[in-house]
Amino acid sequence: MAEEETITLIKRDFIRNLAKKGRRVDGRAFGDMRPITIETGVVSSAEGSARVKIGKSDVLAGIKMAMGTPFPDTPDKGVMTTNAEMVPMASPTFESGPPSQTSIEFARVVDRGIRESGCLPLESLCVKPAEKVWVIFIDMHVLDYDGNLFDTGSLAAMSALKSTKVPAKSQDMGEDFPLTLGNLPISVTTVKIGDTLMVDPGLDEERVADARLTDSSDENHIVRAMQKGLMGSFKPQEVLDIVEGAMAHGDEIRKKVMAIK
Image: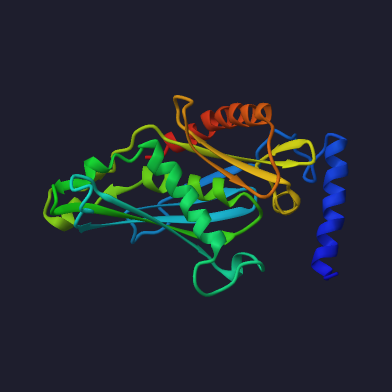
């Protein structure tokens, strides 16, 4: 048995035994999130940017906008694309080279939460139907990984979008103006370890979890997107409890995003 596998088994037993006693490794209650910090305007060359930390997990998101042509099936809508970079300096488990399945899933989960919520009305990015629209690039860079990248990246992307100014002046279209946003989706992830649900898993909790569920809900408490991960399962009541908790956390986190100018 490899040394890493042995360590994981030891951690699994330790974390499970703590959970049975009603405790977590870092002392949090099962429903508590780690401290959240949001810093915007960190990349001067971007139309919008934000660096978000949840605990020690650290993600930088930047927004670039360019003029382009719409897709043929959506001639009156702008285009949004989301990418994620997970470089080895952020975690020994990340590898250099082409995007991994983990980074692809990470980008897709963040993209889906934004896209399905309709918080970014792509119609507002249309300049001339079938000919000219704004293309928005959301680029996320993982600076440090200590669990729960989905929520950290989602919050970084939303905060960057909230701080974005459309570069109209560069296209001789008048003064730059804030990007139009609607209901803001907030992503909250919960894992299941044994019979215990834990919000905002740290890295060790994430590594030994049986199942993971990420809920993205808007300010009207409408679930806009979900992502189930790992091999374990959730009971129907557990899913309802997870959604209820995610919405409560979302209300508090959303206030931080709404305060961004």
